[in-house]
Amino acid sequence: MISRRGALVAGGTGVAVVAAGGAGFVVATHEKPEPLAPASVNADGKLLWRNWSGVQTAYPSARLAPKDEAELALMLKTAAAPIRPVGAGHSFTALAPTSGALVSLDAMSGVVGWEGDEAVVLAGTRLGALGPVLAAKGRAMANLPDINKQSLAGALATGTHGTGVKLQALHGDVTALRLVTPSGRVIDCDATREPEVFQAAKVSLGALGVISQVRLKTIPNRRVRRRVWIEPFGDALAKAESRWAAHRNFEFYAVPFTGLAVGISHDETDDPAEARGPDQDTAFLDALKGMRNLLGFSSPLRKAAARALLAGAKPETAVDEGWKLLSTERPVRFNEMEFHLPVEVQLKALEEVVATIEKERPDVFFPIEVRRIAADDAWLSPFHGGPRGSIAVHTHYKDDFAFLYDLIEPIFRRHGGRPHWGKLHNLRGQHLAALYPRWNDFLKVRAELDPEGRMLNPYLKGLFGLI
Image 1: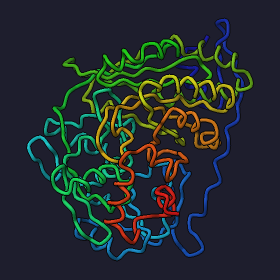
Image 2: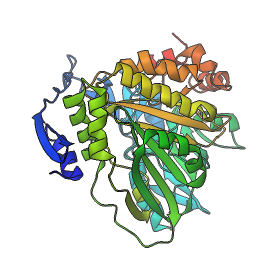
Image 3: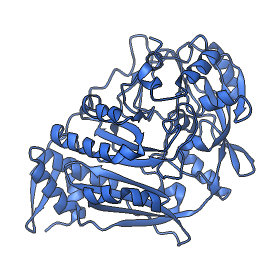
Image 4: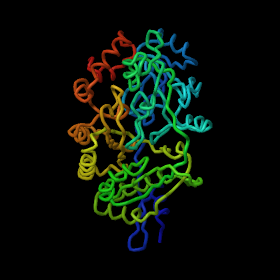
């Protein structure tokens, strides 16, 4: 006899364990080799830069780390182009790679002031570091993404978001910002001062210059109750809308080749703190990978094994301050495609995605993340003009991800999806112009602030239809 917890752990150590009729049997599996790594130094003696998953690489001619805004302005005026800002490297698209100057704002970090309940935050601050600083003042961010390693500027530039029908993406809480342009000019902007620059800069892909600081709305710091449970995928689909309406934060993960889904809710509470407990996510992924390795040849057997091991797992609960629970550690690397769809077609598109993966790609084992985000007015926000439902498809960093473009992106595009700016997609130029009503307005502001295109690497030139 084996416990489900024992099965999960064993599945992650190169062994797949399956319960059958009350007994266990063990079959060895083989781990895929590491992807071939580029040279750490190129022929010109430049050091390698790689993003978190390893899919994006570059050998920048200069790496800049300004200590303050004045130094940043001088660097932008004199640095070799293309100049690209970089945060934590959690974007999967080629936003950061450059043969010119790579600019890190890690030295420009922290909360430097308050205006009422609004915090003035330096743009290089990591989201995970911002939580405890705000909490010390009894305040918190209204929402957080599921990973908190990003810099504030990087999260804003890519439209990073959490989940909740009444909660906007992070840039929705920005009330003012300071933008340093490639000419070294510093622009203070908000809804009334330089309003067009403000609406363009809130989600800018780092194409206008570099944000140096942000004024951010905060809310009272509250405890939330986190609940995680496993249920049949059909039940998750049937109850999704009512759960989004009922919970402060709600999302779920569709788990291919299992017939199951994992629900996650967060709701404010005055209950005393209750420890979250040890990480279960990595063990869960390891179990799914073990079942893929052992039973990938047969979807029925794979689903039966998943039900035997996972379906009866007890719900997990925790109570703590929101900044401690809303984000999750992600030690297992992956590549990802995420699109934001009109809410009325989100769940239909999800069913198509799951069916396509189960028909065509037995190598996939990562769960598919499903969230809901409120509308905002930033010009390049995927949530401009109305709420959106997001679907994020992940693949293990050792696995092929080309199928995301061939099989999954067409589903998202057919349903009017807008891509997450930091996640894999193939949309360019006119395709994007058709999805964003203020696309040409953004391009006009970009050309005015950076007429020489010093902030544009080849990827951004292609994205904006300039090549």
